[in-house]
Image 1 (cartoon, rainbow, N blue to C red):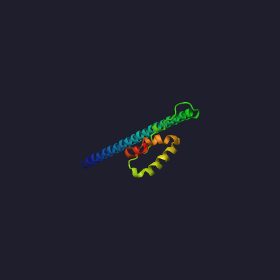
Image 2: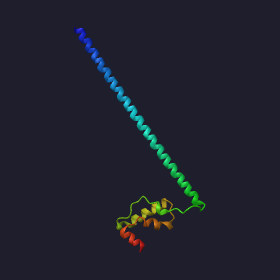
Image 3: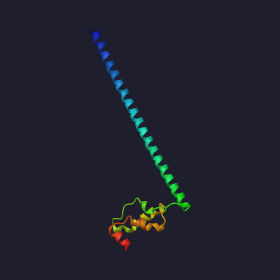
Length: 132
């Protein structure tokens, strides 16, 4: 009997070990699949970004060609809204105007268009002062 009990115990332990090994293999497989999904998502995001940049480049090239030869409509600089918030604190006008000027220069806006672009960003009292 004692031998039979030992044999049963060994088989039980072997079964537990096989079960544990199977669980570990399943977990490794799950981790591999998750990494693969993340990799595919990253590749999709990169491809999307590449396409966006390509489209933006083409848009800029087309705009440059139209304006270089004088053909096509004039660009609406006022619609290329600066990525700066509207002026809310009138006491910060100097800093705000410096920031606007840097932005307009970086975007290559002609100085003749700056006033109309700036007027889109002014509010309340600042806008009232601008028009007087």
